[in-house]
Length: 169
Image (cartoon, rainbow, N blue to C red):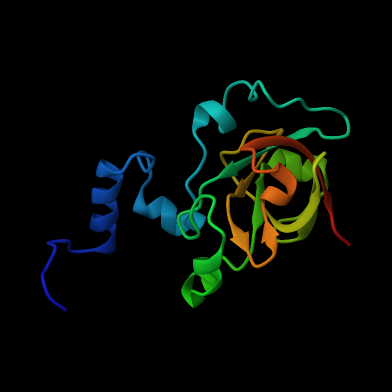
């Protein structure tokens, strides 16, 4: 179709991107293929270390939900492009919530099932993904909108909030 950019594989393109685009550092093409094209949260803020200081958990809301950017759908987009692109919808058909194996056991939820996520702001339903590398007590959700469903329903457009999860019957 024109000029060769000199890349032999998609992995080579991605390696160049991670070397030159802020926020993609530390990602690998192999991880993207395995984990569904997710930009995982910084270890210091979500997977390790103290909880974000501005989030207060309680018995009613024992988990911290953090919005994370998702390569496929973008950070904070209105979802217009996402829902109009069959490839994106095929790869990531809806919003999901990632939790640790320990929390899945604690809250008796199974991978791939629908759960309700409730904060002091609102409630939404999403599919749960049990993921390695997420600290117990933390959940992640892609910052995206699919149709009328948006992570901001629960987070109120904040990056972190306290929530509870329950499997939907």
